[in-house]
Image (cartoon, rainbow, N blue to C red; front, top):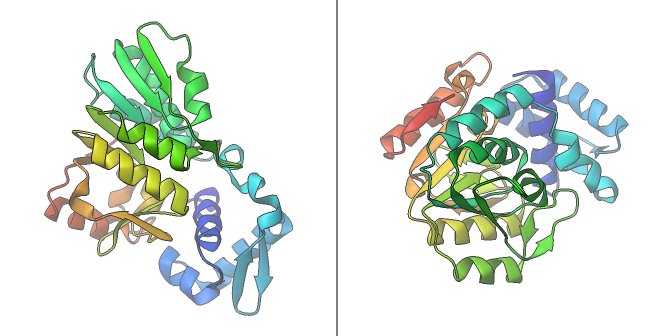
Length: 261
């Protein structure tokens, strides 16, 4: 796992808990406690976490700095491959619900080539990518824009989703765990994903390899709730992603095909 990837995951693990210990982070990331301490020091210098005895807590006053704009450049090439892989699985003429997230923005870029499509988006960034594209009938799901992420959440978003039906839900995810299934760092985002799962005939999950083996704050669904996962080939490498092979095995045993991009 690259330093940028590890910092990304460390930050989101801290954000998803009231307090997280160095030992817990080391176990979940598969690195030494010394590495975790260095990473926490780096995040503290950016005012993204606050070190406490034996661990860290999130710095809420500057949460926007840890959001979409901060994560967007990380693993851009990998996320673009994932985006192309997901888009190739969407049939022209489909009604698609596109989740929020840095990876699904790349999916949006590639979906234009699969037109004609009706695409409902759960993020303002994806809406910008798809606006005015030929053959794309764009629907922006209503709701509250979550600060830092610009994902559309809340009661209005949920009511809108409950009134629609989709052929395919492209779902991003904070973590996927062999025992605990699909999970998200935000309660609001988790609720929207649960609504998307309920309203779609098929769900394609997309996540880079750093999300494998991660248990985030709020459970979204059990492993078998999605129809396929698109991730990067590094997920099979136990040296860079210690939890990757075990998680992939559990997914396949749950009947979830895995596509490596």
